[in-house]
Image (tube, rainbow, N blue to C red):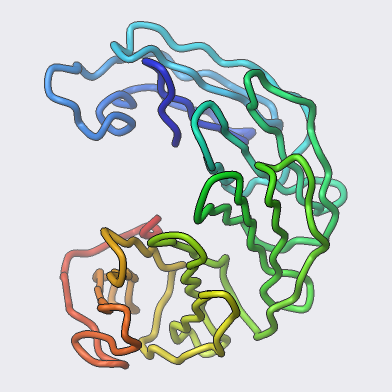
Length: 261
């Protein structure tokens, strides 16, 4: 989800019915004074659509962007003001595709690759864009741009064997933290700080892709769903140590029926 100039923008690739009921509080973080809006469901084709709602949620507009994409959640990132870029996986070629807003929406770009997971886009600074996916070898792959998505480097393999899409967060310039699920369903972590570290085992038995966030430099929080459906949490102060312990998790309880992110 991205917010830009009194609007809320989301990308919806699906061939199922998309309900609008109650979408405003969800998109706007349950903003006080913004009522829930009821609307009939709409049917869309397996293509990529742009849904734009004004800030009052009084009007919804779908715009078809064409193409044919896999039923995987697209990923979007912004690396500076007046810039958005959305990424999706092609239906017929499994390649990474993107479309960029740079003072207006540009044509689709194809970045190649053969992707088997949802893409994960991130940015650690102005004009820096990175996308992470799982390839057919089950390894982690990365593609990068240093000019805001105009030109791209070649794909770079990071190795490992992973069973779910990567989760990436950044607390500042030249820093990425990526979290992945191993073939044993344990959580693993690798960090970029000028170069990539090895993959560190963080334990657990995780059944859904993790969600990670950073509120400031040297702070990481990760949330996962365990085999009992409960949510679990661990954190780091950026020095390589994890709370409550390297392999331990804080039990947030509750029962979840979906992924964290």
